[in-house]
Length: 270
Image (tube, rainbow, N blue to C red; front, side):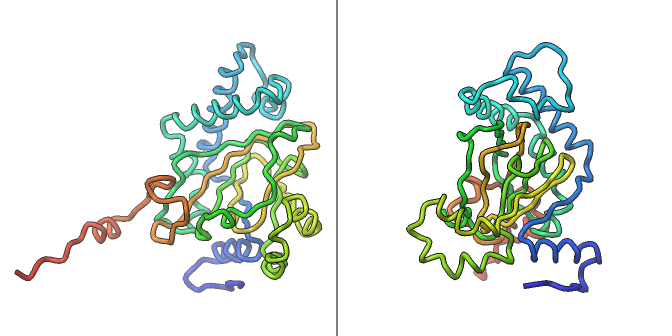
């Protein structure tokens, strides 16, 4: 359903809302350049430490060319070490939120729960071990009130990026979901392949997408490695799925009125 010219929103906000509603995703430029530069440089430093690289490397293409420094067999251990160390950095999640906040405020709200740990995806060229088959997170119990905030650390395009089924095409899944229930992920991918869209998103931009829409990735056929981070957000007071508050999510921006309300006790009459 389109939301046209909500009088409580500005023209720019209405434009973003309509784009997200129509497509099921929104790509926008990062306004907090200092925060994204800090995050990217932090990951470069962690990667150099993990790989024991002491020589000077070009910051501009180091992440794109990470496949020159490690093999596919080393990738998973390397990625897990990166995730652990980056999430231990002071203010890492705060900077992640700061990067995406202007768009979350409009698409999700300003009283938010944030995933406890930010995820990192690294996909080397021709690597078939880092594939995320087509899926929708809601199919495995996630709340439809969640969004994924996806931040690339390199330019992502074609098979170096992720794909998604645009919201306008989702009725195809709804109408035929029962008949597709016995299909494997490759069969499902092929059945809607023509409708899937590989997203072009550059370093310096952010993506917010509806994780109830089918999405995934394929073998990276480009000559560069993909680095992208992802983290889920939802409005605090919306329903939770299998990922619960305190276990997977943490409230990060409760307002004073909500805090007062949560702590309120009606005085006893006697």
